[in-house]
Amino acid sequence: MMAADPILRLRGISKNFGAVQALADIELDIHPGEVVALVGDNGAGKSTLVKILAGVFQPSAGTIEFQGKPVNLSSPGDALAMGIATVFQDLALCENLDVVANLFLGHELNPWALDEVTMEVRAWTLLRELAARIPSVRLPIASLSGGQRQTVAIARSLLLDPKIIMLDEPTAALGVAQTAEVLNLIERVKARGLGVIVISHNMEDVRAVADRIVVLRLGRNNGIFTADTSHQDLVAAITGAADNSVTRRARAKEAADVQP
Image (tube, rainbow, N blue to C red; front, side, top):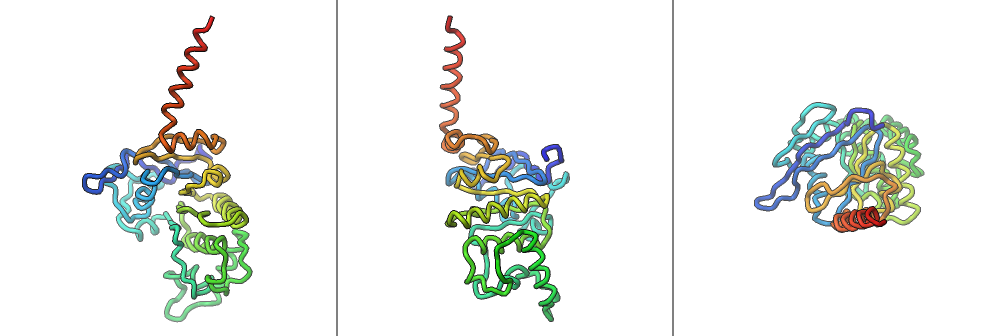
């Protein structure tokens, strides 16, 4: 998986809001068929970075390469057309509309005389490929569980054939069963060869689904970890305690090395 060239490569990404520096020299690679978790405390810069990749903000410095070519994501439409889809935490679903209508919202087939039949067939096909637990595509969103709504939001982003999908807190406020459903869905999206970026505060969910875990702290990279990294070490990197703990371990090793 890691032998493939990255779909997305960020180099030296910085973002200033007036005198406030929200991001400084961020480096990030996303490869096809991998899940990268982006974690950090509130104020670490996660939301700012996501909005840069979604085309909402433009970086103050640095370069973004997509499929090996420098790109300028000047708007959300640019990012989506490029192949970067984002599912924000609020999901942006219309509760009074059914699943089909939400999947194709803004991208209806033949909008002047809706091709309802083709849209329904495509909706069923995609949801079956994702093994989604949604009994009918004609159910209104208001009748669905939190996990089912997350599934619809993710499926909607896949209809536009993206190369990368970003999921902002996809398991927030979900129960155990619904969380497992969403994590399984992320694995199936990964199996389709997409790069997946997951932003989450839940370390157990992150470790369950991520291939790599990228920690941001105070707007900077503060370590890249594998999924088998302990909860304690991840929290240390997020809070800034990691430097102290590394120093203590190094000093203990030095002391052990000089023992007769």
